[in-house]
Length: 346
Ligand code: NAP
Image 1 (tube, rainbow, N blue to C red):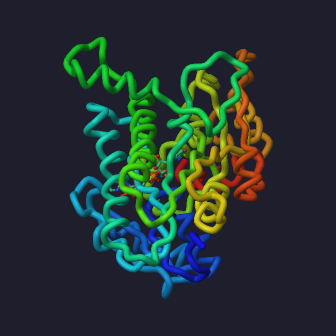
Image 2: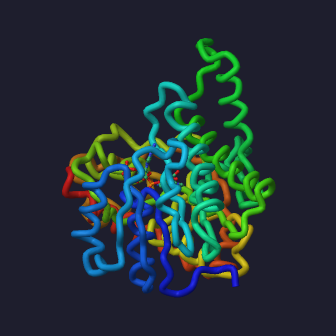
Image 3: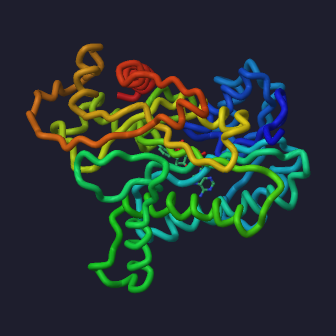
């Protein structure tokens, strides 16, 4: 078998984050032991004393202050049976795409994999890495269908053009493209590592789209809500002047389905060596607003319909259903649960 044993010890990196806290909770609910890495220990203690308290005796916290430190994960991996590597920066506050996003994403992944190979021990069976739709999406004509066979090279090219001439104003990288480059390069680092280092453990990658759904991790105010939920929160709190769909292909997945995808990728034998497009379906912001309106969650602005035309794209989740057995939460359930968990910040 190449899967961790039931009840085994799973390392969850960046456990203080939105997706990782749900992954830790669901692992604990299924009887696993969880070791979570955190750069902010108080946020990890919040989890232990709050949402994970029922399982506190099976949950330990290890400080990893900086993903980029050489050997950052060498201690944390010791004795684990499986790893969900979720920690990576997801924000759009970008001065330098490499310093702010790409280096921590790529070096964090490589540091984790090196540590897993050298320090974890032979009982380590599987490492699952959180990648993203960002590592798949490229500019395509409306009507295109996205799936896990596709790779984003476009954002990497933009980042490399910047790197060759960083002071040239015309070579600056938009923040969303810098984030996409960070995820595309980090996932490539995973597959390159497997090819060149031939570790004894198996790996898989999960590629979620926009993640919505309830927040259980430590969030102190509206400004510290994680990036994907904040986009939805802005409608709840009336921070958007109007509904604008933008031109990017948009799809959603609930955070509980993202956590399940990681856990199934640790458990399912056939998941080894695979990447999985983790997507429930397409959405429009106008649909999100309709759901919020129906449930009385629009606190300050009722956003009249704009009639804006939106390009449609398709998102193929067949592999995640067939191999991982996922059964996706609907947009209405996901949006409502998100709203209920963050409306206290309005
Ligand atoms: P999040 O709530 O911001 O969580 C990010 C986690 O990574 C946090 O624990 C954070 O620590 C940690 N982290 C970030 N930069 C770090 C650094 N330089 N050193 C050490 N730790 C660092 O975001 P999330 O939405 O859960 O995202 C988690 C993963 O899912 C990321 O890999 C992201 O790319 C991926 N993803 C997210 C979405 C989405 O829509 N949310 C979609 C696709 C993929 P702190 O708590 O201390 O900040």
